[in-house]
Amino acid sequence: MTHANLYETDFYAWTLEQTKLLKEGDFKHLDRVNLVEEVASLGKQQRQELENHLAVLLGHLLKWDFQPSHRSKSWRATIREQRRTAQRLLAQNPSLKPHLAEAIAVAYESGLDLVVRETPLDYPDLPTDCPYTLKQIFEPDFPAGISNV
Image (tube, rainbow, N blue to C red; front, side, top):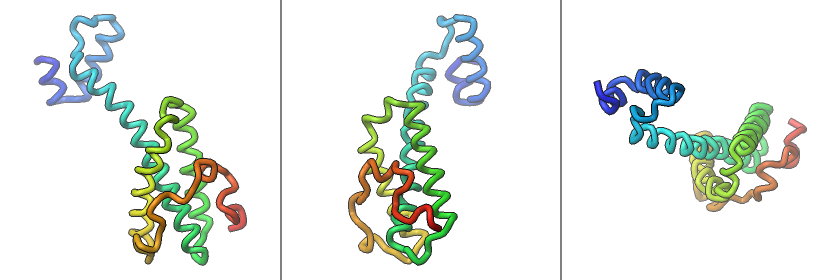
């Protein structure tokens, strides 16, 4: 069975084979085409993971700001957890930092969707663009009152 066939029919077996070839230094037999594609996709996954955590964080910040009577310790915990996870991803992948503004813009759209899906609020009720600064997004004591719920 060729590398390409194994890649398409049994991805896990393909990864085991590629790992073995790399460990042995058998670069001649590596499936370079698919290996390059998979390594590139790993980088994209890190960026997408950051955007996903930021989306949940921004959505909960919006819920916190626009529904003060519904604030809960669950929202507070989600804000803390998503903030911490996003910071950890940035620490582990410092080359994502130059893309942070774009990631926030993309994440904000998903955060809006989260708010509209989970609350009575609708898109016209919410800011079109992210109302939070980078500092606010990652500030542990933001928003005001977060530690009083």
